[in-house]
Length: 177
Image (cartoon, rainbow, N blue to C red; front, side, top):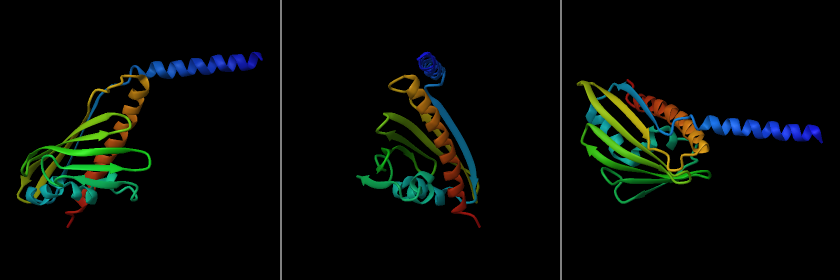
């Protein structure tokens, strides 16, 4: 009986320590990545402007057919909405602002966890045949600022960081000569 009591106390102590550590994790984050692509801005922009095209170059849409997509209203430009669902998670991607051949702003919402991520993809012509594509993601402050949500935010950040890197490489490979 003494051993069980000690194990319960030890387990509770570890749980409290983990939860306390969660309070020190950031409640928001920003990811910024860029890649130089061997194509003019006018060739890259249509792939960003049209949400249906995202299925061809982003890694989260190429994850083994696990995601199902539906489009609400326009598929292109401001107000275009892509709804997606899988067995584990559902969400939306909505284009909020467009500056032709220069910038796409969007909001990514994960329904189950009430997470909102704002994204910006900026195109900058490096010369006539190259474009720098800069991608920025920012997690809005968590609605529920609990230690569990903060751990979740860290794991989601890691996922998005990898996804952006791989998506930029995928976009780059579409124009490889």
